Length: 135
Image (cartoon, rainbow, N blue to C red; front, side, top):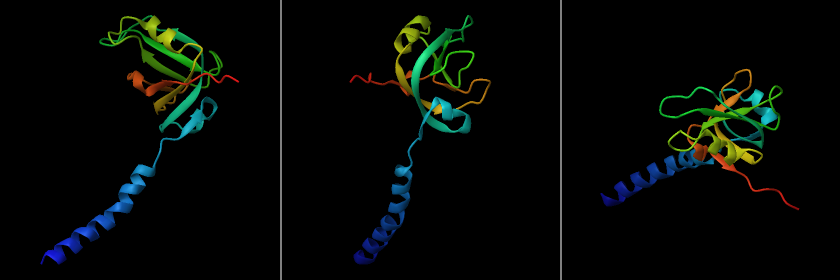
């Protein structure tokens, strides 16, 4: 009786293993700001250099004032932006501006299509500053 139970368990594990491996193999695609227009509604990683930013004059309750960052091209020719907030208390949008302005970043999230496609990155752990490329 023990051998048949072991055989059944091994068959179940063997049958489920390919499914588990297939799920872990899927990765979030990494794209440039120029490619964003072809990936609306998808969850991706967008990398580029922050070249411009704007602090909204109006805030959101519990978050403070949103800061919009433009990658690779400034307004009005921007192809992509991401939105985040200042420090944890939401009272210092200038802190967020200083953290990312003129730096290479990668932002992970779902692309929302608008006049300028964007990712809303309320959780700043989704924004990764990249090391400078120095020869």
